[in-house]
Length: 123
Image (cartoon, rainbow, N blue to C red; front, side):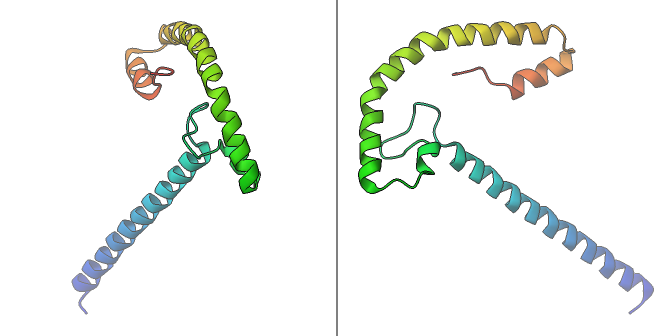
């Protein structure tokens, strides 16, 4: 093979290797994000139907225990929702105030990025 042909083949193999590494990194990152979402479960107080919060899922409950715990959570849900409706506005007010104070020390560019990356609580 000529020197130019070898160089071209070498360049092609390097690009192929880079492409494969980027693909592998994407797959790895995707799996990690998926695992984080699974581990986090639904937002607090938002376990749906037959799904337990992650901490309870990891206990290895029997079917009877699982059904009992789900029934307890279902009965507690109206009270939990009522409390959260009272707490969330106050928590939002504190959070909004802190965010506004933080923004006063940021540059315009940082402020734009801060707003983009930090969604408001419960919204």
